[in-house]
Figure 1 (cartoon, helix red, strand yellow):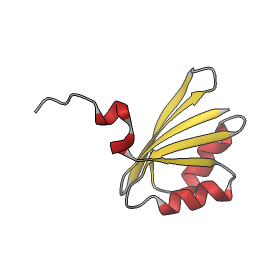
Figure 2 (figure 1 turned 90 degrees about the horizontal axis):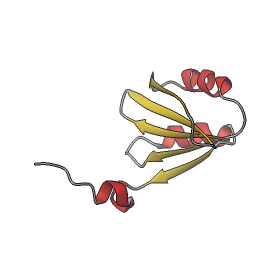
Figure 3 (figure 1 turned 120 degrees about the vertical axis):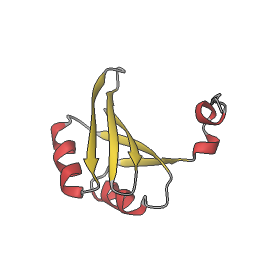
Length: 90
């Protein structure tokens, strides 16, 4: 199993891949393009699960993941303890 974290922005995204044993596979910054995502997924071996923060433009990525049988979990930043309780200097 490969786990992806996706940081989606308006024009691009950053993806980090980790194997089921916790080994970091890689990190990529891609334009928001399904062809680039398809190429990346083909490079990864085995099944894939992904998580991303819910943003205003996540719908196309959810449709893409569903069409490839990739489980995509939407995370709400305020509900994630590690983010919500982070001490950020002002």
